[in-house]
Image (cartoon, rainbow over all chains, first blue to last red; front, side, top):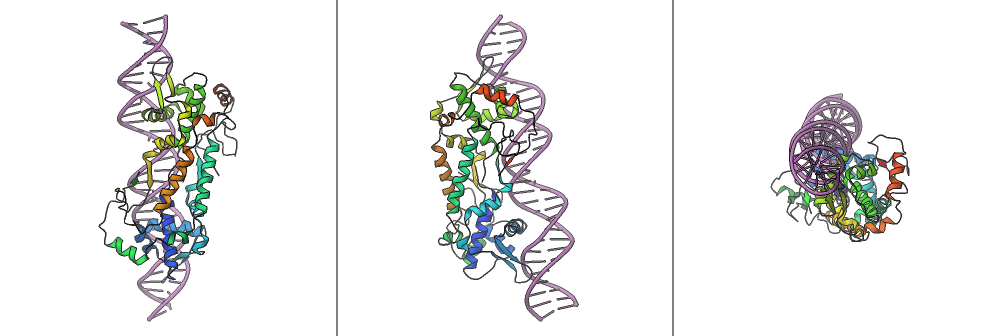
Length: 162
Length: 162
DNA sequence: CGCCATCTTGACTTAAAAGTAAGGTTTCGG
DNA sequence: CCGAAACCTTACTTTTAAGTCAAGATGGCG
């Protein structure tokens, strides 16, 4: 049970956009990538998904970039996670045929209800948080960029462990 | 944000063991594999992890098999998930150096607290469920096995989608 | 003792996610 | 109308998780 890389980067990217929005700015891919600490190619893929899902709007050409498609106060985290949750696979039981309730364990499976409930709990918790609510503790785009630039490079492949 | 295959199979395997326990039985790898609809090789790997973590006890040789290391009423789902959560990677931010609080976004990152809180919510929810609580709605081992055997084979690679 | 059933262990293969690269398209500004 | 800035799209590579295989170790039972 963990958050995927796309989910985490997507949340943070949207938060950066929300922050930029308060200053009437949009953010280019390169800028988002630097803010996130990922490659522009990777950021491009991410933003394309968010764009397709209608969470952000893109503007091509000079002076282009991304901005939120809706007010930050109207974007709830559960929607973001839902969009980025890779293919939304939620159960792995190989005895499941793809048709709801047609798992051979149906009726005998005490685990599936737990998974469903778990998903609802997470969704409820995230649905109560909007991007604008997270803005309070955030620094400005420029401050973050400056901090990142003044930090020495490090390996890309290190993951946070708890 | 999804449950991994190991987590799901592990939960169900432990539930099968809890059910067997009520009849004073232990379960062999082959039996667990059939109950789960996975290969014995895969089940072996899974059970070895649970064994190493002290959740189950194994007995080799004739009349061997697995049984719960503790009463089902004493095994909470959060412990199971924790053991099976692959390497327990919980954040993907590549600007994170592996030392707690040393992410370049620290202090500017509004997302990490959300992830931490989310994890706690899930853990709390799971910590209130024990294996024995799930037993109520379960059929007997024999009933499940019979049902599985009477079901036609199907592709292994189909995943549940919601 | 010796054999069989069973778990153990590590190496290997396959499948999925993450990340990269490159060429194409659109827009703006001169 | 041209060129640079910026996004779009597809294909490819790398990494990680999932699943398989086979040889080894262990315990029970005749």
